[in-house]
Length: 373
Ligand SMILES: Cc1ncc(COP(=O)(O)O)c(C=O)c1O
Image (spheres, helix red, strand yellow):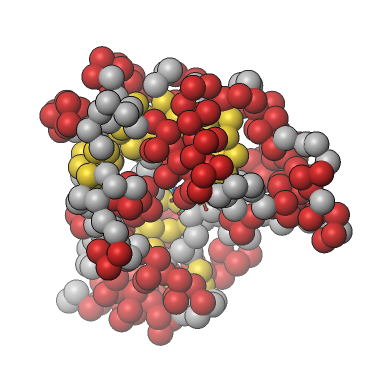
C-alpha cells in the first residue's frame, strides 16, 4: 500500500496510487463517522452567478496577484495551478536542472502523489527518510548526503502526512545548505503549512532559501479541495519554467475555479481562525479518549490531524471493526510500510459531528484491544 518508488514509467507500467484506490470507494460509502479527512471543513457561503464565472478570463484579473499579495512576494514569483497535486509535477519539472541526472530524491513517509509522480515525468525516484520512529521525526541526514550527487531535485512535505509533524528548524536549515552546495533544488509541498501561521513553526521554504519552490493550495487549511486551486512560489527564473510547463500541459486555468477563489481570497484568514477554534474544541476530547485506551501519543502543536499506533495493521482493523461500526479513518501504511499500525485521525470536522464519532472510535479501539486477547 505504500508509495511505489522506482524508475521512469509509462503505459501499463504506470502505478496506481494505492491509497486513493483504497480511499475513494470507502469515502463514497459515506460512512456516518468519518475521521478520514486531512483538511478543514469550512463553509465559505459564496454565491456567484454561473455565467459570470465563465467570463473570468475577460476581466483582466491575475490570480497570481492574489497569492503574491497574501504571501508578500512579487507576482512573477507565483504560478497558479489546479491544486497542489498538479503543482508538484510542474515544480519538479521547473526545478530539475537540465545538466543534472533526471532523478528526484523524495521524502518518506509521504502521500503517494508526491513521491510517485516524478516517475511519470521520466525520473528515477530515490527515497530518503524523516522518521518513522516513535517520538521524534528526524531527517536522516546521511541518507540525504548519500543521494545528493545522484539527483537534481529533493522533494519533501515539511508538515508531514500522515503524522502532522513539522520538520525541525535545524533539519530544515541543514537541508537548505546541503542542497545549495550540491547544486540541487528543493520542491516543498506546504499544503498543511498554513495551519502553523502565526507560530514559530511557520517556515515556508520560499522565505528561507533561493533554491526552493514552495507548493500550496486552498485544499487543506482552507477547505476548498473541489476548487482545484493551488500555486507555486519561488525564484522568478524557476517560476517562469513552471509557467511554461503549465502552458504546455494545461493551457489556461479553469475560469469558474478562479472566480470562486477570487471571491474568497481576501477572507482566507477567517478559515485559519475557525480552524484554531475547532482544534481547541475537538482535540482535548480526542487526547483524553486515546489516553483512556492506554495509547501513548502527543499530538502535533498545530493543525487538525495526527497519527498514533493502534498496535495492529490499520487496513485490516478498518475492514474488520471500522466498517461494521460505520467508521472511516486513514491507515498509516498508505504513507510508509513501517506506519502500518498507525491510524490517522482528523479533528477538523464540525464539533457536533466529531463528538458523535468519538464513542464509535472508542468502540473500535476496544474491539481491537479485545481482539488482541
Ligand atoms: C502532502 C499532500 N500534498 C498534496 C495533496 C493534495 O492537494 P490538492 O488537493 O491541492 O491537489 C495532499 C492531499 O492529501 C497531500 O496530503
